[in-house]
Image (tube, rainbow, N blue to C red; front, top):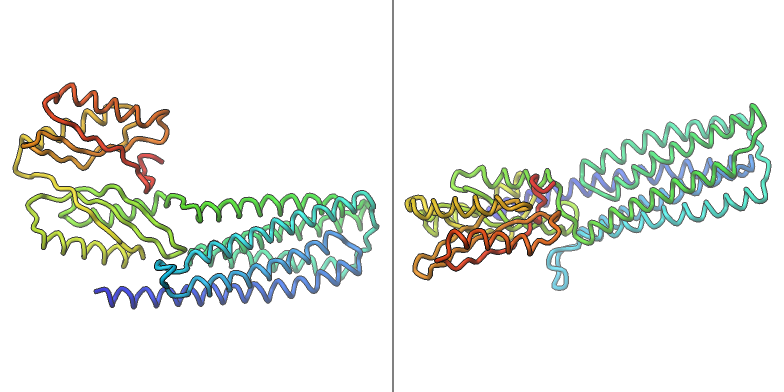
Length: 386
């Protein structure tokens, strides 16, 4: 089974790599082409906006190159120092692209301010108008293609590049509008437009950088991903519930997961082993997520007294404000111990105080038992907590 999974994963990874590299090469070619023509037109027409647009295209080509380098680094096999591989190199490449965009925006803003202080008169030609018009169309098509491809293969670097290209089309359209305004009414908006464009670039760079840093810091998985994983695991009839899902992101398409499942105490160790193997296989096959560990909670199907206590414990816990879930019930009749977990919303002013309130409420009804109430965290961002 593991050999089949490994083979499938390698094929998917190779397809993804080829798609990212091919898309990046198309981006490099298109941006270099646009940059050269815009640079020539900008210098001939003495247009700071067109020159800045040319430089921006050149930085876009560099971003695509960085995407390819990041993809190659991420492909490196796991080693002793990095047993989970080098997949996060893709996030680093996305961060570098965001920094380049941010730097380009700050630099262009400084140049625009200089032109506002010491303005120069632009000289537009028909050729300049045509070239900028073509650039608008090319950038729209390129941006949509790159961003859509990035979303399809789950590449932040491509999504960033595509978003930047779409923004460039707006910038080029603004430059075109400024040129037309100057030709018709002889009003020069070059420097001011350059400043506005620069602010847009800086804003985009900050947003991209923030998103990438969030990935590196370990942000929660999406609600949709958590829901799909829960549905996949609970699709097995032996599983009554799934809890404590923890996801570890080691790069795009490199997500590991662990959790607890609740099953009947009538299952044998061999049956539980088989169940875990089936869940692991299905989770990888359907969602490309590696199940690293799956612990077990059991419930009694035959002991009605224990079931009534469990249901009442859950009812009391859920009646306390901010408690989202109660699970993992365990009753030790000999030692007179009741153990269970609760998930408390992050919206609670004091999560520990909520835990104490739950314990007091249950203790009042079951004073003969020692209570072990674990304050749990829903790392998977369930729909309850969304």
